[in-house]
Image (cartoon, rainbow, N blue to C red):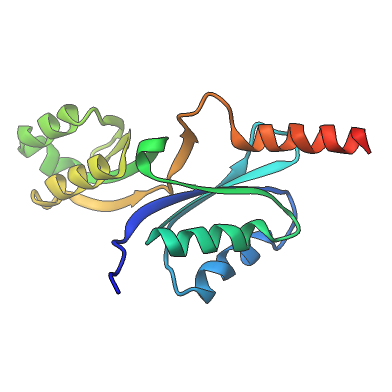
Length: 184
């Protein structure tokens, strides 16, 4: 039997805003022993509906099963999985750097500018740099800055994503549900 290659998948899950649903969703990953790489939860463009953006390394067979299990949850409206080429993706990286080291080395500022990061705060002790980009750029900047020994703190957000499709799948789904409800 040939093992499928693991890829990074992004799940977009829409649910009603109900306490405990996040626990139910993450439990599906736990039961299948798949680690969540990143997780972002926010209100969606639809009133009363929340959007969960979850990334995980998996093979397609496993991610299909996870998506179907999540969709069976009573408060979940829609769950779909995507590969990176099907989405527009962003994360935010924040870097707290030692101001004295940054001032000593002009290469640090060049690296920050080259990756289109922004310096958002400067004081005599530290400066804060922010980069909104894809995961690879955020990690590249971290590793480049870390070589100078100037990183005091570093964090990155969970992924946020929208589909490249002109229509949001959950919108289509909700419209069909409404048509069915009216037809009854």
